[in-house]
Length: 369
Image (cartoon, rainbow, N blue to C red; front, top):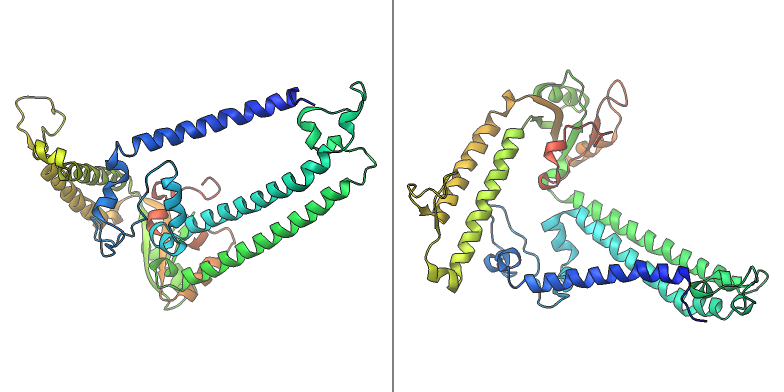
């Protein structure tokens, strides 16, 4: 039986392009990575795995991922070598849980594939419908030969499917139970740490009469007397966020130029220079040291952002606030209890890490977000 029917061809056409695209992307990645070291090697050059006291430009501790090895699968090997505990520190708990779920799903589907190939395919392929006359309604060909369509209606071979289904169900239930137990234990351990997020609750969809920190503070202090340490009301920080983008642009420019200058080829060319502002091509504008220029832009924007944040109380309200409690118990209770005159007064949840918050959209209605 030659598998050249329409279903087989459709399967091949669906499979082959994906495989081709996968290898093309891997080939491009492997080719470009050593030729664009500023993208993949710069941070590794500045902070090696042994340099555990490295700080970023804001003075924050840098948790350095393992260096990416050479070869087509170097990035995958590095990702697999990155421990969950390190990833919690560098990327947060949500990323660890997501990747853990992907690993479990890969394991479950691998077992299902092996069971299907080792048990069900032979059982189906050796059944009799493929040997029927071609004009018979039960006749099958192509990929249908290794499916239940090749099994006669009254055949006992269907018990093989039932047995495999029971085994796979038990494996899935066991894997999910283990996965959720790990989720719970890691979540508990995460919340036990004295990180600021364990004491903070984010409140969204605040009513119109809650327009500043004091109004929100008074509300929660009435429900949890003595437990509220501070309230940070979210104002319209569009301008600040725009300055933050410019700040990180300056940081990236400076770091990239420093990296280029640190290489023998870059050092031979001398310190990089350019003509600043929009008139970069104007001959009348004097060139400046590019590294010093972007360092100056970084310092200037840092000061402007700090001043804008100090004056944020005068900005338009976004009807969202972060409430900081004195104890983790109070924060957890506030995030879970239905408090207020109506259960839909506003939305509350334990706050995530600042870098994990989508600040431009934090004031959106929860139903929209």
